[in-house]
Structure formats: structure tokens, C-alpha cells
Image 1 (cartoon, helix red, strand yellow):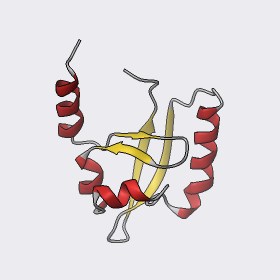
Image 2 (cartoon, rainbow, N blue to C red; image 1 turned 135 degrees about the horizontal axis):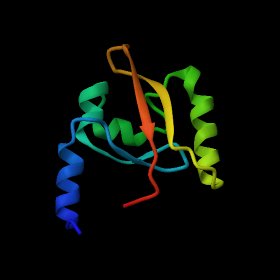
Image 3 (cartoon, rainbow, N blue to C red; image 1 turned 90 degrees about the vertical axis):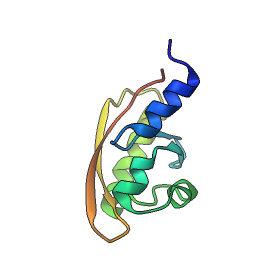
Image 4 (cartoon, rainbow, N blue to C red; image 1 turned 180 degrees about the vertical axis):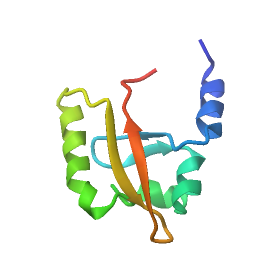
Length: 99
């Protein structure tokens, strides 16, 4: 079993955005790829729920979070994120129940 330090190192070195998100819409932890991809600081991304989610994708995103919180399995979900420079980024979200 990898150590916590090894898992944290991997989490921070992966080039794709990885996150731990709560059912409340807030990111609990993000890796540096989120800031590189979207242009926001880590603090900005952690401070507001669904900060960068495209307005048209917020309702489906909230719905998917509600499904997961009630026990429905949602294995993959796609939505668009607003980059700081007003460009849109499409990201696929894959859920896991833990390590």
C-alpha cells in the first residue's frame, strides 16, 4: 500500500485536473492542474461552489451531486468550465468512492 506521502505526491504531479469535491459544490482539495488549466488560483477555486462551471451546466452538475449523495452511482459526468480568460474548457469527471 502506498504511503500518504506517495499518494499526495502523485496527486500533485498528475497533469490532469484531480479533485476531491463535496456534495455542497465546493472543491475540498484540488491538484495544481486545475489552476494551470483554468487560470484561477487554488484559493479562488476552493472559495466558491461551482465557481468555474459554465452557467448552463450548473443545474445538471447540482443534480449529479444530489444523485451521488443519495446513493445513485454516477461513474462519469461531463461539463464545461470557464477559464479565467473567458475560454471554455470541457472536462470529463470520473467518480470514485475512495482509495
